[in-house]
Image (cartoon, rainbow, N blue to C red):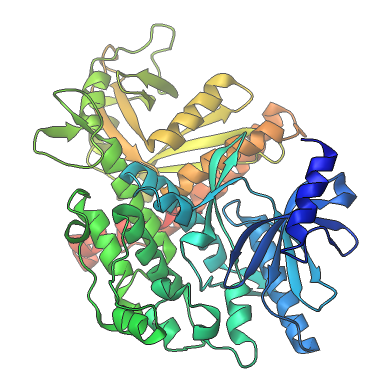
Length: 540
């Protein structure tokens, strides 16, 4: 398009919008209006200090009447900027300022794509797409809820306005589709300013407000966001809001959120069949009382991961297709089929008959499955078969693209716990492929071969990764593409070994603290043992 045409278009739109064509802070040239809502307008602009780089500018629908409001606005923008640096699932805020008429604005990264409201207008999401988007929303909220550091103290950040318009699906040429949460901190700023009420500022957000938010409670915690997320998840699956109201008034929505019991997914959309665990997640998020909801985002991430593994592991015997929306009786877990394949495997001829372990991508008709092959004395294999197994990843990709993958075979006696470590070098395509497969599949098979009879695999067990671990692998793979090799591979291994020894000592110290079964009874011992195990499994 010619420069004259662009200038003509800008001139025509400027008649309707005074900001188009203006320079903000003598730097940001406003080009076009790309969105508007109750809190303000979003414009496409150019950063002239960076060669005309496209950025987005949000100009809020208010004026900064005094110094106190200006300071509060700056504080909330600072918080949003901190969060954007911590998580790729929160939009990055680059700068902020005030227009000539005292209207506050802030500058964001320019995103190409659609918000969730635009997507849901077309149709509800498939369960697999729903899980993909929800996982990323939860990772962004998890980062915010963990808080930021201000003057040496950690402050959890509550969004307060989770709704489809604030969930953006950005198309990235390198990373594919990335979910970004918009407007962190702005909701609190607008509702706290003098003389404003929730009704004035958030009429468009009322369908997603928690009951306690609508009651005006000032000390909202993360469970308010979890309620809003529950409404959002229900709508993503069914295409409809869980509550039906006769009007869009504040009072009508308050009655719905405080007193209406949410329907099941099938009651709203009989075509959508979801696993029971997913229905349970929705209903718990939509609980009226904050104490009845999941207490943090980690709980939701873990439950969503269970659903994801269940869906990935279910295939039809008749047509070998993954079933996404129904669970008829003739379905069997895909892991059982791949485990059977593992039991047919022979120990490679190019590997020594010794107590060693190594990873291997198992090719199956559905997809490559990550596996770890371990040769141990038969007595050890038998001892660990009915025990708890765990997985840890240790990385120093900021100095060298490598991670240490550790499979842990726990024993009631800490000194008898078995450790199976392996270095994955991302400079090697094999290491990259295994890490990527672990992230995508979410589990791996552990194959046992005995030293006494090494020919064929004797036993197989399957280990699952947490949502955090899968996201870590993705992030490490992305980082490794740009990382500088500041040290040599052997030096990187030595650094990882140091962290590995710290991890071992930490785990063994906690296991040693578990009371013996004779003192508290077997059930209590198992409960405490599992508590410690899952504590380490869910570490960020």
